[in-house]
Image 1: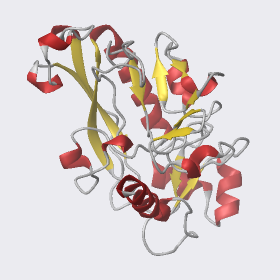
Image 2: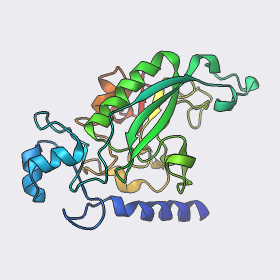
Image 3: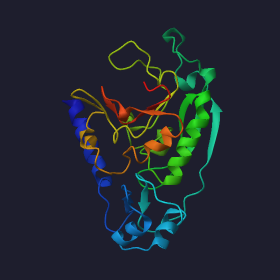
Image 4: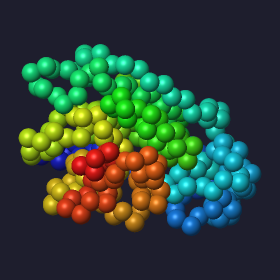
Length: 264
């Protein structure tokens, strides 16, 4: 009962970001780009100009907008800075390393990849994912593409800075995690540092009647285009163009959040 209550509360807290207000309303307003939409179409639909859209979102007028992008419909307090990224080594303590657990990749072969991202409120953030060192450059390319497309991410580490009010870690975009595949003794690709989960709540995993994270059933209708959702013609391409496979294309189950280099 407690878990169900937490899931319901989480879903209710997310409701304000599901449907944008009309342009000119108080607070931040936005538009999620759908297939076939252009800047001119969105501008006419929302009662603004193309020039305003490009200025408010810091995007070039001659570059097509991308599916799953989120466009502001009013002026920001300050423009978004250029994408930034850096790579750092990690300590065993940083990844909660336990030798007796025999995780398949040593901390010396992991890297923390820092990237710029835009949160669900449209604010600029500096977040990180941990991946195997040979995956770091791909991760930088992926998140650089998502940032330029103006795709939004609910949260990335360090959550105590980026989203301190969020207690549900199942909502966090992340990479390395020394764990087995649920219900098995087989190492997850997250344990090898070769997989990334993005916006798990908006892109749940479906295994039979089981849905994870709890409370994310609202997002099972994948023909919706809502903030943070990943679609094959949209944000998924940032990963697949960089040699990641997408769990949203699996047939035995669907894992819309999951991207890996091994298709596992």
